[in-house]
Image 1 (tube, one colour):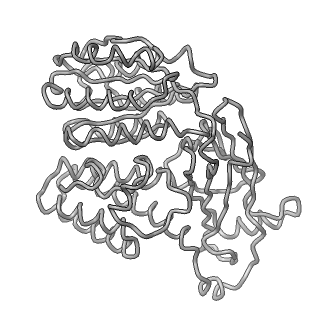
Image 2: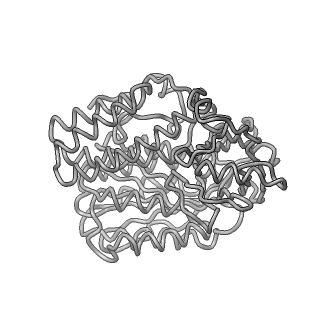
Length: 443
């Protein structure tokens, strides 16, 4: 794979500047993988870490087993997978094995798993990561996929301490995706672990909703072409604000999501106008923003691609105010604002502040006025609010906020939206109106 197939587009909200301290230069950086179907497959080493605690008894455990079979059936024969199960104790049910050798053993292995005991989520995750450790740092993509339906109530339970460990291993090449099951798990812990682990955060409201999150995960992993991606701003980068919840590596450098073929990652940046004007007046660069994207391809080779914002003319405040905005850039910044409103609404739901929550949904509806997808999500949230369904409100708000600000998108995603149209997309690219429900299903 050649570096030229990693495409960078830098687009300002308006292609002009104005010398006003009250204005910002808002920029959208899009990083796209536009290769064909013949692209190399990133070899995978996956640890499937399955909660078998007492609360998983019955339909949930059976649904998790079925989802595990579906997940593993979609992997390539030469990919590697291990199965770790946990309650208060952790068991390596099957060590890291090629999928071709694992598939025949899977039904018997899964039938032997029964539920019971407390939830030592940290120990289960850690054992999965340790199983992958010998393969990290090379050409393979190493991923822990952690499933749980309950709150961590045994072993290490401090969210910050757990996330620090997850982040350290992600930097070493072992990333983590989390999949919640039902309505009783700790959505804050599971989303924070996924963010720290540079993976995905998903959940299934009911047993029948569990297949789609794992389908999304395996679809992403099978189509992965760029990983360990980061963005760096070069030169005197000033006070740039990153609006996505991406981890900072060092000043001026941030992690980006891994990138699947025919998809885009994006990052929303802003800087005060006077600083942008000063930056581009430097004759050595003549640009307000110079960046590089560093990423590892399917063969494990590191590529660095540079790009810069074209020189922007400085105009009067009146001319700036009258100039039209780029639709996609404006939409992405609105999605970022909507994500923040949903975070605030999550906190209100947790405290049963129903009047405050209703006000925030009014604010969200106003932001979503020209965005059919966001408007549909507000309809769902209002229905949950009317029912005072606190558990579902908290889950939907947390996961929707995370998705809005860090999701991969299809190439050149348009504003039009229909639930039927989303079903034609790969599961990891779907815009969902209900994060915990199977696409196309009703509440």
